[in-house]
Length: 256
Image (cartoon, rainbow, N blue to C red; front, side, top):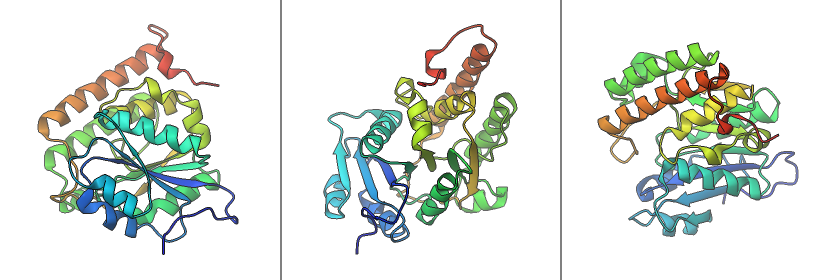
């Protein structure tokens, strides 16, 4: 039995979006772990995978969008969110199809938005240092994660447990306010959208999720991690310049 459909008794339409690249080996496992009857639709956006991700996604009954060229992780998210909004989503949950994040949290994250507690919910992999390392997170990634999260909390005035998770839920209102199309097509998109949310005073919260690193889970290498870290710091600097009215960035201004 499929786990999604248009449920008449649900006030909010919940859509899961999956930015995918070579996810054939883990896709079904991820889908199977989503709690039954917890979402209305699942969208997979394929970024020119070289395996059978698209074929499998169609067999599983997902709505599939295939890019004609590789658009990058940020570019993939742009397609994900725009598609979800066009389909009338009230709550959008981004879940990577690599089974690194526990899909059982989907309804919990959606409920925090449905009950008007948060506009955006992040899944925090750093409940404890021991748990994160035991889950396979490389030591250098843990160190980068902690350093960048502390810096961002200090300058953005937030108190989030982790900024660098790829498991997130958004209200329709938040995605309609944020100019996410102006963001990078690379991994730093994740930080830019949080900074935009902070400037727009959207309510952000987090929920713990176990960290899982394994062979088939997607992960960027050390050099890409360094590049991502530098770009994150540049994004924070741009935030400060904008807040101090030194340089105006259009992407930091809401649509409404």
